[in-house]
Length: 217
Image 1 (tube, rainbow, N blue to C red):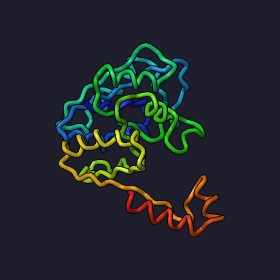
Image 2 (image 1 turned 30 degrees about the vertical axis):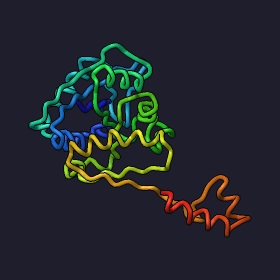
Image 3 (image 1 turned 120 degrees about the vertical axis):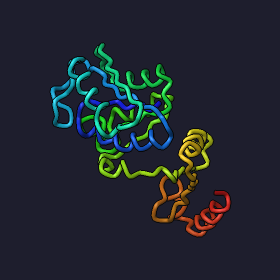
């Protein structure tokens, strides 16, 4: 099951074409849901915020019946009890529903924290044990054309980061896709931390270190 948190904004809805495409690819089901937020702002992303269960249910019903999910098993749910931590509720719902994937927009809240990923999405990623797929809003028009035929997995040698391989492998098998593993070797101009200091005073040593990293990778 793929679950999609929606706040009623067109920005949050930008994930729907990619979600539908993936659901069709793997033969999956989708659940869209909305969490009623306590003391919620009047607007979210410049649009009216859904603060009442009845209006949220009406909104989700329109999403479910929309053409984007044509032929896909999709249901809706409204968490009617107001919560202050929306991200916690999203994480809890994913675990309760035994969801396989959470799909969210990269910009999940307002404010400066929203410049890169969005505070809600960041919190869900850090709290949830369910994999999260982030979709850039610019992909709304392109989402329906996604083929999910190639998956890129960046690795850095940290065993903790290799946990993503298990999920990626399962998803690739479901999509009949290829996995491409990537290890990026820093260049002299892109080094950070201790390597920058070593390169400044011992450029020859740094060059040999970079050469050693390639076969190790």
